Length: 361
Ligand SMILES: *[C@@H]1O[C@H](CO)[C@@H](O)[C@H](O)[C@H]1NC(C)=O
Ligand SMILES: *[C@@H]1O[C@H](CO)[C@@H](O)[C@H](O)[C@H]1NC(C)=O
Ligand SMILES: [Ca+2]
Image: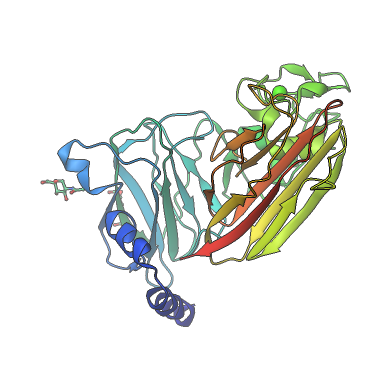
């Protein structure tokens, strides 16, 4: 592990583009923080009553001595609140990179002490271009304890991980020890009707146990009220429209995704879901659309659309896109992204081509 960490540092400092060096000074650090009783603040202006910036994407990694864990305690915490932390958030990873298991996303004004379960803790701070708050100051120290308390809107997995309660009994093993799929009501666990078991077979159970028509899934409207019915993973497992394309995991460092038959017209009634899992060293994925873009136009893109997300409801949501103007290029933080294309039962168009490239640190 030690050798690996050293190698990582050398590799990073050798290949750092200039803009990344600047950004590392502004927020985050390419270096491991190794001094006990340290402090991490969201941005330099914290003490000067400046709110944090727009479109931030910072990373800090703390390294405790072998045999100790990293404990993180908030002195101040104020990050744009959202039920799924979909806009601005702190995310913690139990390891030396963002590829380690997530300990959860945090936003709002409550942050309970938490520790890693091994010597490394990775912390990212991601903000969008809307609404900035005062940010945070964390203290960290090294401890032999494992400190963990999930937030009110989180489910505590048996293995200690905290996941959004919306993932409980949704048919996917989000805890990675399947504890979120245990003790589900009868009728649940199979991927449909996982919530309360009280909804009809052609209905979807929202996290608050209300029932919505399954035709409303992935139609661009937030019918559950918390975004659960518009999540790509929900579309993948619960939508009545079968994924005719995609449904595969795309790996590597770059690729191209096209609508079916592109540049000829795509067919009616298609759902394509691609899950990009880029190489482990990836810190963001860059998306660039071909100018030749044509997806059935509508003011709200309710009929046919493409969207790209990290699948936390509204987190890092790009799209839905439709019409004849290609979306401008953008980055999605982390090494994973979902690309979803949906077409309804009428009016077909030429579609899209989008190239993605993984960027490392
Ligand atoms: C803010 O000011 C306090 C007291 O002057 C100082 O201890 C602390 O390090 C400062 N924090 C930041 C983020 O600059
Ligand atoms: C780490 O800091 C927290 C919060 O100040 C404190 O409760 C805890 O005892 C500290 N742990 C160690 C090992 O110093
Ligand atoms: Ca919907």
